[in-house]
Length: 193
Picture 1 (spheres, rainbow, N blue to C red):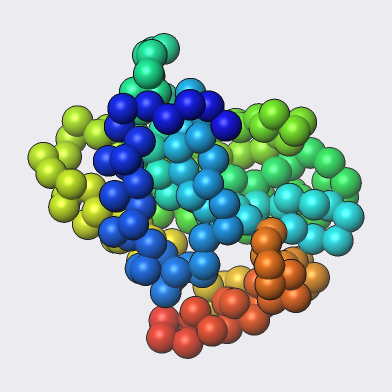
Picture 2: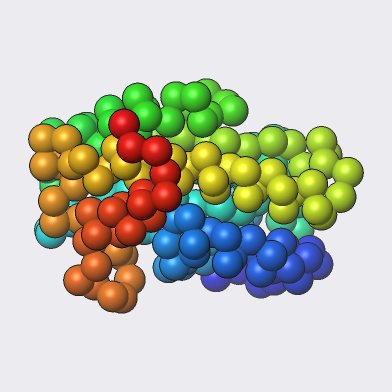
């Protein structure tokens, strides 16, 4: 992890403000990642020997020219889907699923992502420029809206098309909580397709 920058505590206050809503609508956050290109918190999912398959992330991202001191220029959410690694045919089914069901959720074009561990995949972003917000409350409201809209995917995951979500579990404890169980709990108050 890189050293904390001058805006680290400010970003942490935004994360603290949205954490209960993220936990309620999406699930308990499992990890935090900080680099020169992002500072996000997320919920990751793994499957059998495929390890990381996809994740739902909320935070701050750098999409513009190089800046120093971690000056991120966007805020929002993304869904990352790893497309390389074991079982690429199943990974492509996840990619197709999220591309289809999140098409109206996106605010930017799909991007490619790479990880320091060798992962390659797609990034489905719902982000806006930080400068477009006038206050922390506007940022928090945007993030809560994005979280709520992402939660609308739970009924589609719960339907488990082609059994693609079988054996998918959280990337952190409790290891035995499947995404199907999580989807059924979270989707109980959402219109089902």
